[in-house]
Picture (spheres, rainbow, N blue to C red):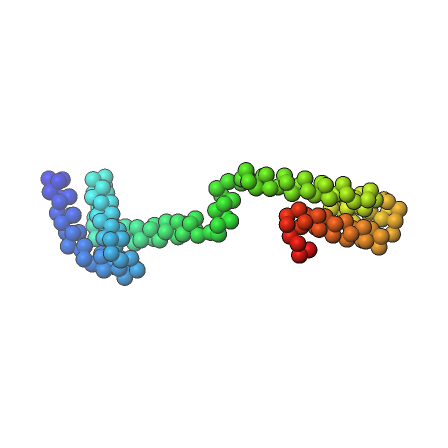
Length: 176
């Protein structure tokens, strides 16, 4: 008796298949996606009829169909947000560690910079180190080393020019 009742319920709902397809297409879902949504709604109706008393299968189908459309839209939106990104974003997601090549290049650049620093006069090197590595202001460096602020500015400028020039020459850049 229960199987007959279930069959009659579902047969009655099957008559609304075309209306449900039109409703789904009206919401902007077409082709196989529209068919899939309506079929998923029927699968859920069948499962619900097995578990509980579904009094209005057509209303159940409409509500389920609308919910499935929303679920697919949300899932599609999430997929787009995950996929859309710059190449840099993707590289950062893939691996935060530098490549072997980047590590080697970085070490070479560091060695060149250390060499350029070693070539500076001691006072100029001290000013640059205090400014760039210890993050002291020109006034703090002037006070610490007993020189004028303008002299600190001159030492910083000349030291940076020397380092840039040394790195450019080592990298083969002749227009610096």
